[in-house]
Amino acid sequence: MKKEEPGAIGRYAFIDAELLRREKASQLRSLKPVVPAGDATVNADGRLLLNFSSNDYLGLSRHPLLKERAAEYIDRYGAGSTASRLVCGSLSCFFEVEEKLAAWKGTERALILNSGFQANVSLLPAIADKDSLIISDALNHASLIAGARLCRCRVEKAPHNDVPALRRLLEDGRGRGYSRVIVATESVFSMDGDRSDVAAISKLCEEFDAFLLVDEAHATGVLGPRGAGLCHGLNVDLVMGTLGKALGSFGAYVGSSERMYQYLVNCCGGLIYSTAPPPAVLGAVDAALDIVPGMDRQRAELAANAAFLREELIRLGFSTGLSETQIVPVLIGGEAETLHLSRHLSENGILAVAIRPPTVGKGQSRIRLSLSAAHTREMVERLVSVFASWKRP
Image (cartoon, rainbow, N blue to C red; front, side):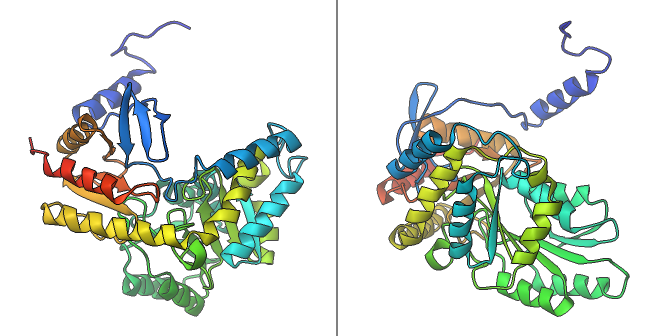
């Protein structure tokens, strides 16, 4: 292939222009290799860093039982699932793990998918058509936004976490001839660490006969009874969650009724047209499901450390927004200033990544801190001391 010079005129010009724009706006991203060095540390560029960017909320990704069970499943089932689950990739272990998931989540059925992004991009198009109305929280994850766009139907952006505003949108949509109305939200928002009032939203959806899809990616394992999430015990049509955060492995699940399960098996493209996840993933998830429900002490310590961190950062003059979970954003504003703080943290032994547009809105750049049960209070205190030593440029 002929090598194109930077700034070349032609079909690659848009690439050069976009990369240059991002570089000038302090929005250019790059991939950087890290090697896990412990439950809460990584080796990056030969330096040992305390990791406050991981979503390994319960510190299970390196747990001996997860690694042992993953190896056991490889030995039993092989390295790959070899096909879509509707062909010959539906290994018996899927049904066993899905049964465990459903019992834990309190749903009739559970269905495992390859990733959280794939799940959200697939679920909305499966249940919507061009005549539907989707009402999506303004701060929903990019995967939910992408899934809604694929539906090619009317999408209304609901003001963030505003239940009265959601009611007004539902009232406005009533009697307009929509084939169905779908409300999509998260139970814990990934960039802000705040919670939605799932109970109130569920009641609204029942009142207006609307479908409710809730993304529990950042609540699964951490919040709710036995870590089962904030949707547990509520009437929610589709409960999506991930297996690669608090459960320490990879993939996603959907909890639903038996009727919805059978519909998704027939109509969800992300399941139908994708090779099933590998057996090692199922083994690790199976082990995590044996451990997570009994981790109430770790969940309580995680919540206490997050509350302590918020209090200390606010005392230092930082804003943590509306955070009330293990996700603690430190709102800085400008991209360059946020990158400066991220470098300061790194130079002082802390991995805490800068989050910039387009992931968040313009002027909303932040350091997104993710606490884990693997973090001790001493580690959190060290993090606070590094923030205290930062001098704004």
